[in-house]
Amino acid sequence: MLAVSAFQYFRPLPVTAATSVVPAVEHVGTAPALPWPAQGEAALLVEGLGEVGSSGGRSPAPMASTAKMMTALIVLDDHPLALNEPGPTLTITRADVNTFYAQRSQGESVLPVVAGEQLSEYQVLQGLLLPSASNFADLLATWDLGGVTAFVTRMNARAAALGMSATRYADVSGFSALSVSTPADLITLGETAMLQPVFAQIVAQPQATLPVAGVVHNLDALLGQGGVVGIKTGHTDQAGGCFVVAADLTIDGIAVRVYGAVMGQPNALAGAFGATRTLLPALVSALHAHSVVRRDDVIARYRSPWDESGTIVASQSVTWLLLDGTVVTRQVKLDELPATLPAGTRVGTLRLMAGTRQAEVPLVTASAIQGPDAGWRLTRGL
Image 1 (cartoon, rainbow, N blue to C red):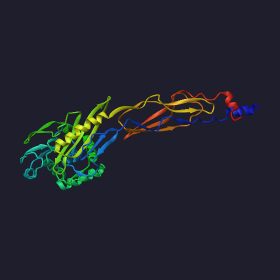
Image 2: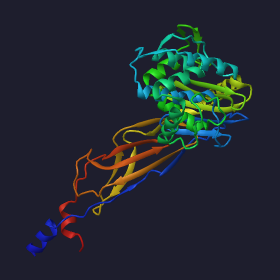
Image 3: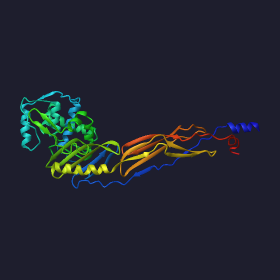
Image 4: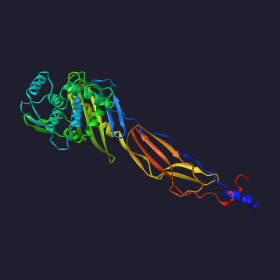
């Protein structure tokens, strides 16, 4: 009898399985009806959430001078600059002067140059990005890769590498109607370009002074308004008004950058700015801080074979800035619980996902698991 009792008491104890008590999916509010432009195409992206909406389909359309973002990006890739570093000197040739006159006669945006004029790389980038000089795009392409044709090939290769599958460059300035893209692709390009500190610095400048052209102004009429920090305008008769914008905002105490792009807007740049000026505040009003999980929230419960119950809780809080209507998904992974366990022991993971945002929260026992008493050990299974 004593041997049987000892066997009963000391034989291995069963594990306990916990069960999740949180919903796998949560809809945060109601999706907003954003005031998308009636014509053309548009898209919005919130960093951390990804694209939050688009309009007008996803058909490639002429991109106008927004193409110059890629021109600048490639030049900075090949000839990187530190902030405020002028970089190498480019000397204007007679061929560059001829390009100026030829492009001006075609109605392109250009800046005057004279043979022998010397410009730093930084100054040429200012002329390219602020007043959108197409002749400076040709100048940079020739300086970097020896000619426009080779540079266009490089632009298309870079676009493919960035996943800009709807984008095709036919020239270095975007004046050609065969240079096409979509708002989503232009946002991808804008995000990438803004990671270059020199690019971001230049597009945030209201004006610059160049040797021959003098004071040139940023065509971005929204710069400095509503958190706008750039980035690039464009318009032609075929493209209509195009604008890619970045804005740094603080909403409910959370800093966030948002990107937008509009294409094919009537009334050239005025239409592009008007559409953007309407979209951005509407987006802001639909973004709110949401407590996805709070520390000590009960995520799972357990009850042991010896009738000991308890909870498993989140070990930390997660608050995200979310667009109304965003779907938050939760995946709970729980370990089997041994017979005894101290309070605060990690026993699982809560994985949270919303848009492109993800987080993992360790799950811990809210209280100690004491294990069964002697009576249960001796009488189990009898």
